Length: 251
Image (cartoon, rainbow, N blue to C red; front, top):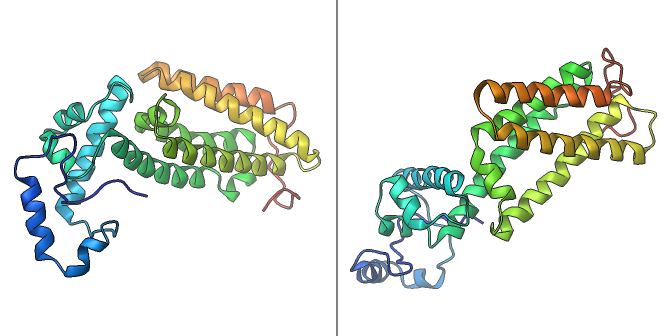
């Protein structure tokens, strides 16, 4: 569930502006009598509030990448966003809430990305084309969103974020199995699972190396990752072979 809140002047850790409690009380009394009984009810975010939340999340992503999640602070995030800590606390009660909101948004975009990467149409491609079509969007997403790696693999990350990420990994591994089974229609399911697991872990390890470099070196490591996967798979899948879409493993 989203942890961000829009326009609620709720102080945290004494950082909210003076008088915030009185203003909050006035606002509460001005509402309907039953309003206070449903504080968890989602509020409609106005455009200004949405923009402020996006600004804070962008700043948090930068701080998490620069200092790591553990060393990051709400003060540093507010400073990066160019706002006061009190403004930050109007939307997020603490650093954990910011991480959860940012993680939710990045995971949603990651799901869209791997959905586009693992299209059924890629089964019609030969091995090298399939690797390009599948790997390129996944690598591009991670390079454009380095905070994703920090939040998904860092220490002391809120459990809600890592749990959701683990569930996504299970789904991705299943997609890899489905694609691989199309190229190896006669292989036993257990063998397909082993090969898919190796591919998935080679990709994750290669991605770590790619993310540790920039510019030309990053591009070189992207090519190396594709070469490794191609050489691993080619003895099993001739380079000009397209997958069989009638494979028993294909959904």
